[in-house]
Amino acid sequence: MTPTDGPLHVAIIMDGNGRWAKQRGLPRTFGHREGVKALKRTVEAAPDLGVETLTVFGFSTENWRRPMAEVAELMGLLKAYVESDLDRLIREGVRVRVIGRRTGLKPDILEIIDRAETRTAGNSRFLLQVAFNYGGRADITDAARRFAEQVEQGRAKASDLDEALFETMLSTVGAPDPDLIVRTSGERRISNFLPWECAYAELVFQDVFWPDYGPDHLGAAIAEFRARERRFGGASSDDVLAAG
Ligand code: IPE
Ligand code: IPE
Ligand code: MG
Image 1 (cartoon, rainbow, N blue to C red):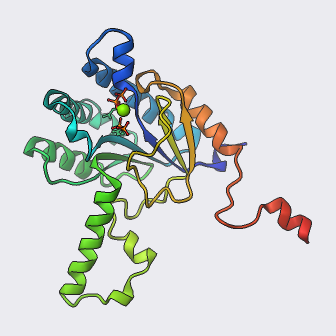
Image 2: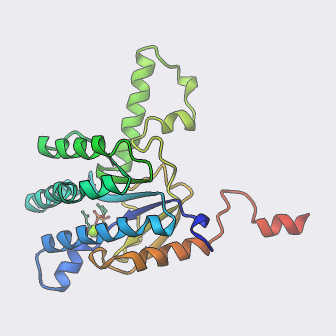
Image 3: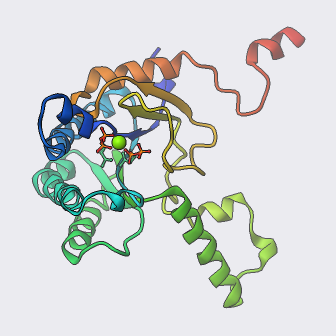
C-alpha cells in the first residue's frame, strides 16, 4: 500500500471536546482549546499520508443552540487558529477555504475568513476546508435558491439542472467528494455534515475524543479505508473476473 491508494479527500467530524474536558473536571472550553492543537497535528500529518484535501467540521448551523459563552469561545478559536497558523499554512502551500453560511457571523470573523482565503488563494499543494457555520441541509437549500434565482432571472431553465450543475451551487464546488469521513468520540452519526458530498464516502468511527487525536489515529483511519472495497453501485471486481 502506498499513499497513492487514497483517500485523497478526508473529512473529519472533530467530536468529543466537551467530554474530554468533563473527564478531567475541566470546563468545556478547555476541551475546545486542546482540540485546536489536535487540528494542527492532523493538518500537519495529512499530506505525508497522501491526503490532498482535508475538510474539518468546526461549527455547525445547529451549534448556535449552545450557551452563548461556548459559542463565543468557538468563534474566538477560529480567529486564534488563523492568526497563529496562517503564515505557516501559506509557507506550506495550504489553500484555506471556509465553507458554510456567512450570515450570522460577526465582522471580525468575516474579516479573518476573508484574510485566510485571500492570502492562501494561490496555494495548490493541499486544500484545507473548514466547515464553519456549516449545515448540509442549509447548504443544499442555499444551492437550490441560487438555481431558482437564475431561473427567475431567465439565465437558466429548469431542464438545465442535473447533478453536475447542482454541485456548482454548493459551497464545496470544485473540491472532490470526500473518500473517507471520520468521526471521533464514539458517536455514530453524520450530524448534517456533507450529506450530498458523502454519498459514496467510506465511514470510519473512532473511539477517541478529538483533543487526543493525532497522526497515528489518522493513519489508522486511512488503513481501515484502504482495507475496504468501494463499489459505487457496481459489482465486486472479483465477481466480475469470476463471471468472465
Ligand atoms: C466537538 O466537540 C466540537 C464542536 C462541536 C464545535 P463537542 O463540543 O461536541 O464535544 P462533546 O460532543 O460535547 O463531547
Ligand atoms: C458536530 O458535532 C459538529 C461539529 C463537530 C462541529 P455535534 O457534537 O454538534 O453533533 P451532535 O449534536 O452530537 O449530533
Ligand atoms: Mg459533540
